Image (cartoon, rainbow, N blue to C red):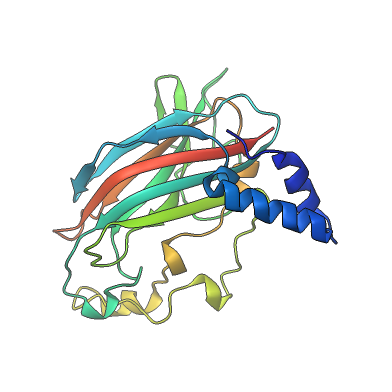
Length: 246
């Protein structure tokens, strides 16, 4: 269920100068129902699964009818390959090729789209607009990084990723956006390693993605593990997706 009086709390905290009572009320609501601030669960999968050197669909869902979508929150319990030879990357999100992507599929209505019909900021993997992928009367709009697993993390880790309409991706020049130092790639490609950058925390804000979603869009959470280097694995225990909309 929604947090009680969520709209009043949300709107109150959007003000330039929220009152002390509004802040206290918001704090009480969060204390009573900490998960509720993310909204109700709209999709869930509690089945353990894994994929090695490949990709696999873990969870798909269609967005309900809404006037305004405010946020999507993804709650994951996962881990990646539990060993690598790049010892300096252990415990970071650098050089980790075990991750989750989000695919956005949109119903195909009318003529075949000539290109992507929306331009989303953020961390989308670029698609070739001349090669639109159409399946089951839907076409692939784009693919976005959701969350990377920690490098050589042996324990299951809980990740909470919230994409909110009020969030804007940090500028690439902002150091807080990136993990410190370059990734150790061994003898694979040292020059490439110096150029690679990895998101701090393994994810990046993507409010623009939420702002451009439409009712009826299908989101697919994909488990991925690198095919270019053997041994990479992506394991997941569960994933809940929560949403706040009006």
